[in-house]
Image (cartoon, rainbow, N blue to C red; front, side):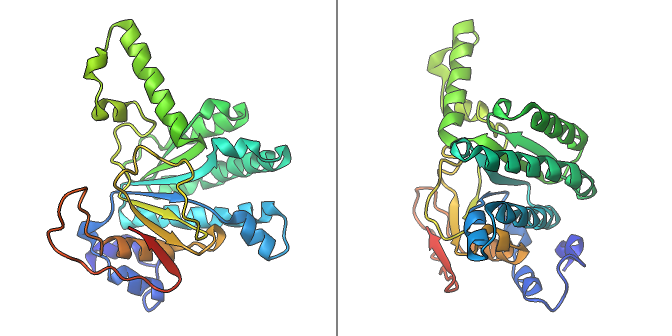
Length: 275
């Protein structure tokens, strides 16, 4: 399979993951995959470990998911790393999360460069500690010349806040006289979102079996296909990503229109799917 040349060695032949890979149609990959990473705390609690152990274990899932996405040839991957609501957590946990973020950015730059990945932070980045902001800017600048996967990491992010920020930007333009309010339409609003210039997610994945959007990409996921897995984020690996994409390719996407051809949708017992 010529399409899998970038996955040779990463997904060994004869493994279940390789069988999932062989079943993919590389002409119909989702352009943009977004993931709500959930279950770090539960993973740690089930093992009698502190919550930080779950967050640390989740970094391995981030690493493998990002690299697999790049090797598959996806255009964009967006991971929900830290929400605006997460600021309500204990200060010690927030400090630990920020430390892990700095550690990840520092250690993964070589891998991002090797895999031709562009890192972009989306959200109210100005809310983050200056040391975190500096690390983000360093990695964004270092990877800006890459041409492969765009890896959006959502930090201090909220879907409603994103829409509010877009509205504020439009109002300022109107006040300056550079925009006629009557010209505002969906396309113009999209251009003022954090994901400006990017296609909306084709596939939204949520781990840990929860059926919530959690204020994530509210504008962009209007027609996204949703795939929910019981797997907790620290246990999420490339095989789960491949299964989600395979299931996505069985969907008939209608965008509010009529179904042209019925396509059966099946799922394994450990997956629950929203359509």
